[in-house]
Length: 277
Image 1: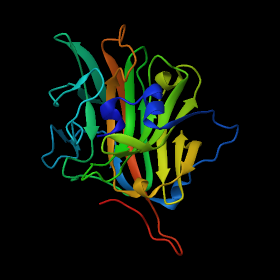
Image 2: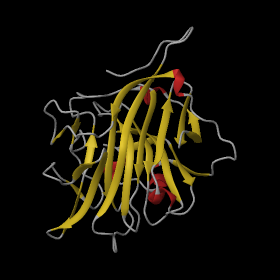
Image 3: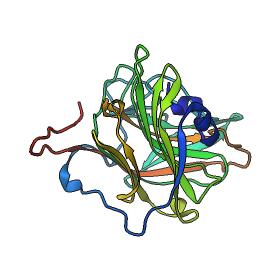
């Protein structure tokens, strides 16, 4: 179970013990140096290799633990819904059909942790987001929970459409369905700027720090924890609600994704590389 499964928002996070902080990018924030990394996963969305719950495809169309969240059902892939590829851009469409909202989710790992997972490194997606009340697009990292062992989740991007001047980046450690550690950051942006153009959303993870990036410039950081170095899979979704009203949500709403990438830190003197499966 993860924060997405229970619909973690500001108020719920406070109850669950996740500290919330506002953060405005500084005048000259540091940029990530990708020369220190090796590309390990590259999804340019020229085509889409996806199945319902895993049959050797690059992506599956549900959470590995088979749990929906929010006010839209994540449906199996069908012809042109909820996913489309148009000129190298993935479109995830959320639409009202038969009196219910339907949308899409992609995960790079399945319930048996098959697929792409990586321990530490840098993870990035380039996307343009839908706007308006109720929309809840996200790019995040997660891990399957087994035997009550603490499980990490890192939300690189969560955008609640009724707040067009910020998005959230959040860390979690879950144990038996409860958040036992983590911090949620409000990243302030020019109003509706994330809806008008593509931006990159990234996070670097190592034994020292977890650092969040917007357009490859640092916007928040915190000390790392051992749980954050567990292998995690990549997830994209266009959710609805997340605890906020969906009345007036645009039908359809579309999330546009240019690419998803992962990088492993190159080995250096006295340090081993951390990388994927």
